[in-house]
Length: 333
Image (tube, rainbow, N blue to C red; front, side, top):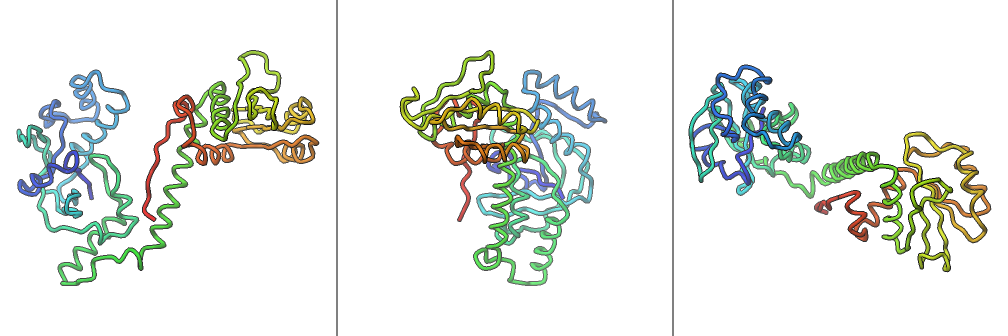
């Protein structure tokens, strides 16, 4: 089963229904009937869209390739109408076709004919299916589990069942909760992927930005010989007020050992507070060194840093946000 989106905000969904078809844009490519391979398609695409960003081009070529080559007669097709919260469901009845068709000054010339067989309310689908269908890709294949959900609902409709609407509060509360937890965990991993790619110099700036968001003033050490203190933080920025926080930042894959911690702790004085950030984590012996230190020392690995970023991101200054741009996502309670 294939999802084919009906343009931005589904403005083509009525045309899909009336013309018994699905279609995609990229009209500048012209008729693709003579294109017989993905390599030829890529050549045509880059000739027509030479200045497009590489990632956008790769994504678009993948969409067109699926529509031109991967779809088959007999495959199921769906398209979403957000204004009515329903999915059109049908069967693909033709190979790829090219037809000139202008709708609202926009055209979808790459066509596949579809026999629409019914509609399925979004509210009738399990939460897992709704999440799968939430992808913003123009064309994508729907997994077998979601396909079965659609078939079950359509069969129930044919049999006259009225039990299609799902009571989210009573039946799917736990599923929604699990879905939210899955999204949160995926988001955390994606943010960590971004953090890992930051340069060592920018990582020092990021840590300093986190401390500023927590209410401290910071000084980042000049580039050059490492004196064991990458960032200095205090309430006044001068170290005249306590706490005076000395920060070592190690942005590397290797786990920090006890020798590194002993060297860092050896440079601390009685009124100092130590903060050691290692995106590669710490050995057991290193953690022991921090615990037995006479000067308070806090160890922060990549998960601890991520927690601080998420907790204080709203207070980040512009410079720090530019190092790690994040967007807030709202989720229903």
